[in-house]
Length: 444
Ligand SMILES: [Zn+2]
Image (cartoon, rainbow, N blue to C red):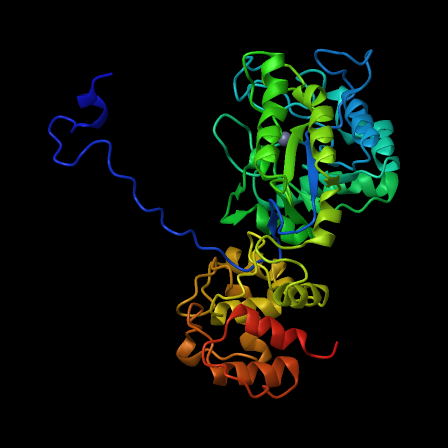
């Protein structure tokens, strides 16, 4: 490639080409009852491994385990290393027809229109419905189960896939799998991850709304353990799984503290099962470096937040407030204790855990609750409750959700919502950390 082509101007254009990178606009992030958990801040060498798309009764490919079910192979590897896994399971994909096979190596490899776990026309070899023995085995081994939806249909439209029709359908699909595990094993799930990572739901909703209605937290991950991307062959795939991990651990033995590693309890687009080839080595690397591999729920119990250590003042306050029904965490699982507290956030902190249904109704009504708050605003429903309760006011029909909380507003909130006087302190520029300390200092 010539120098001119790579760095010069395209003909007829005055601006240099390629364009200089634009500074990315900071993405707005909101307090939320549903937190997406990718990794957590901890000083312990502790991490978690998540397996998607199982359970799978078919053997690994290539099969080095004499026909043993893939899920069982993975569970036994975990157990040999004293590790516990989180299995993000599906219910049953046998309703995903008519369909025809996708092309090997394509994103749509498992079916031209739908996904099939573990493979097209082999739906009865996977999913909780067809593999009760594997579900029972996972639970007996102390592993965790998370909701990857019943049918593995995306919550909304994504290119090339048949998605679900809207919020009701998404919630119904989640409930169906939850029902299978509750009726079969009395097992309550608390974590979920959307099929194909597709968050958008028709009608102005998203995965956070579906999970808020279900009472779930959003299970993410921070490190691709190598189960997804196809490489030139089996050896390359297995190596991709542990080489990067080895390199990172050699450079910094603490690199995996609080991380969530993702793998697939199923086949990749090339029809292989890299997790079966690399998991043992990954677990050995981690345990050799002093890591404990625990379920995601255990990880969250030890270290709930992304940006703040559990034993720090803000971490302690927020843990207590979470236990008391407050909503102190952003949807990316951060606390941001130094950030200024806005009016919308104050309303959300206090009422965010009660608004899931109200928010749905508000969006469906299409009516703005305040002159300056659209029905879809993430804090719209909390603002309505805050004003209804008398803890906050909306002068002239405006709520001003982005305005910083003033001392007078905090005083009113304290009297009405917390039933006590605002203690003497400098409340001129209230931060999240300051508010957490105030709310957590109250007697239960
Ligand atoms: Zn999946």
